[in-house]
Length: 185
Image 1: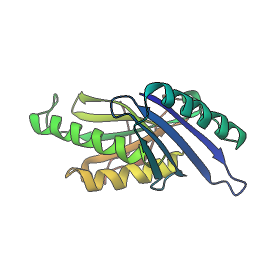
Image 2: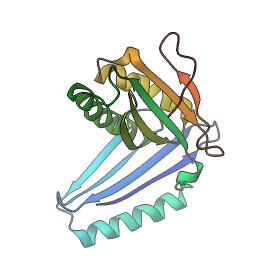
Image 3: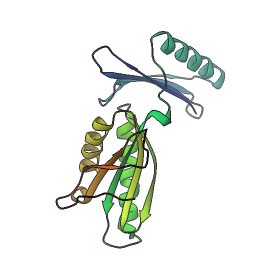
């Protein structure tokens, strides 16, 4: 699958995104766009072979460049981490189900809002930790809370921390259950 996501900041400070991809298996070309943090709008074209998909993606990239859109490198994005406290050190079958459920929900939620991507997850040391990379950290924290409140039954055990691109391992706690005052990986 070929994929491109680009951004531009309007004069009022609002961040917009456009993305397009060609799905070889489905023979479909999709263009998606919107304001970062809000559900986007999509248009799909069916029966697009690989050669046509590549040409459409090149044309899309050229048009986005002319319109002032550009990719935001990972090195300039924030790391947002969602973490659930678990009852056991290694996690149970229920915790592994929670991991699959939360990762799936966050992947879709962040993508359809142009906020970022889920980079991975770990289960251990009494915690489920989900790593994301996001372009607007405060909007992403709100989106993670909304998504996981709706998608899981363990919201009361959720902590969220953010690290900026200048210090990618210096996480600052942005949301936590009552009584939790620190964050560690």
